[in-house]
Amino acid sequence: MSLVVDNIAELITNDPELGAGPLGIVTDASVVMDGGTVLSVGPAGAQAERRIDAGGRCVLPGFVDSHTHLVFAGDRSEEFTRRMAGEPYDGGGIQVTTNASREAGREALRSALARRLVEVHRAGTTTVEIKSGYGLSVDSEAELTSLAAEVSSESTFLGAHLIPGEYQGRADEYVDLVCGPMLEAVRGHVRWIDAFCETGAFDAGQSRAVLEAGRRAGLGLRLHANQLGHGPGVQLGVELGCASVDHCTYLSDDDIEALAASDTVATFLPATDFSTRQPYPNARRAIDAGVKVAIASNCNPGSSYTTSLSFCIALAVRDMHMTIDEALAAVTTGGAAALRRNDVGRISVGGPAHLTILDAPSRHHLAYRPGVPLIWRTLGADYRLPSADEKPTTEPE
Ligand code: NIG
Image: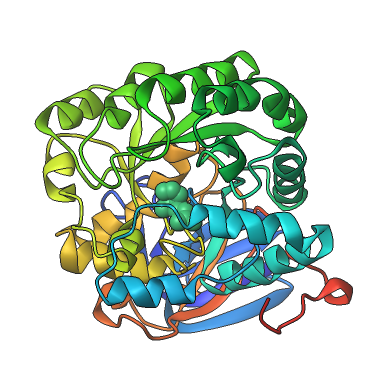
């Protein structure tokens, strides 16, 4: 059955051939769709079998969240509270979530993931990447990646998230496990491989070994880099041809130069810098130098427990000096580029009908009205939401 979203005050298509400027903005617009595909974009008043009256609201392409860790069990709110009292973040809490996730069991993990996906959808996100990384054993990483793969084609193996307790002092043995039996157990479930290249996690040599093993297994590459300090991560990611290097909180001139000369996207995770009291990355310098950028939520229980890309946009505009248009592009076409996709993050004829309708007349409200429920409706998604008969429980884990 065809559907028209009519009476749109401001439609962002991200297609300059459809509308004004780089965001392809159409005013007084309508979008007609059928069977999950956009049929036409045009002036208000188009006809279809069903109609949603947007009532003068703003319509955007659904957000593309290219960095999340949505499969986990447990709660680290006390760690967050200690951090707000001055304790620094060092990533060590990954082991706490790993212990909880190993113990939780498949059904509890599946239910928690489903609950978070409902939240992701309500937040206006229609494409989501999901990492493992809280299993850190062959069986547990296989479980987490298979759960991610049940719901999203953008699933990522992050066995190299932390050296688990039982491998303390035997880091190289753990890297061999990740590159060998663990990768073998998960490769059928994932599109991407990732590593946490940081002091206290994996050094450049170990990260390189993991990503190169992933490449040999046919996976695309991404890397957590330069989150807690300057380091080799960004340059390693560029050298290996990663689709994205994520965090980039600390960027040297050489890092910016290398990124600008490459196809690697710098994915900023401002909710993480907010929640860990890190400085914000110098996005302005990176963008002005020609670096391709994305913004993602990094939803995880330790460093960034939010699914809200609206919140990330507000932080990017307020604290990273990005314009609203840059920030909006970063969570749509930027996120898509970080996943090497050009079908999502835009509204184009023949493309997927993934639309986010704001309860506001223009995109400016995303930064102007932080913290309010600004998403009126989300249409379509690239991931599988729970059906009515498998509705996730609402009680806390
Ligand atoms: O991207 N930095 C590594 N991984 C996550 C945090 C994980 C955690 O603290 O549980 C991140 O911030």
